[in-house]
Figure 1: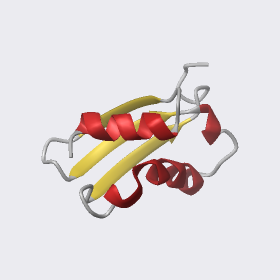
Figure 2 (figure 1 turned 90 degrees about the vertical axis):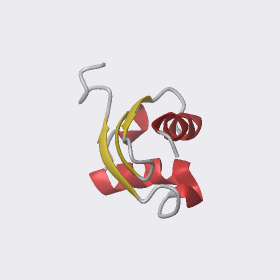
Figure 3 (figure 1 turned 180 degrees about the horizontal axis):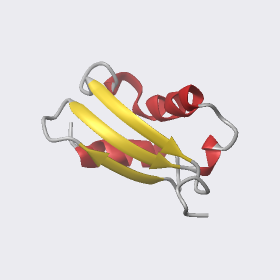
Figure 4 (figure 1 turned 30 degrees about the vertical axis):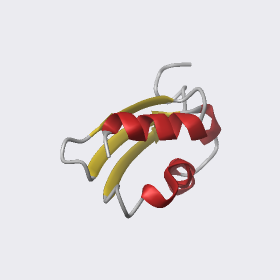
Length: 78
């Protein structure tokens, strides 16, 4: 798995998101995801939205994914 592949999967599930994925061992990754759908949601709900875009890859090809999820306003992008 590559950061680029994870980025594309997240973008497919959250169109219009700003996504940055890092990780160089192929199984442990960190991601920043900024999307308007996170508005009014607690961090766990935001993370679930991102995990849903990755489906069965989570826990398999993607062993660990540390997430930072922000709304555009929180990210200073509004």
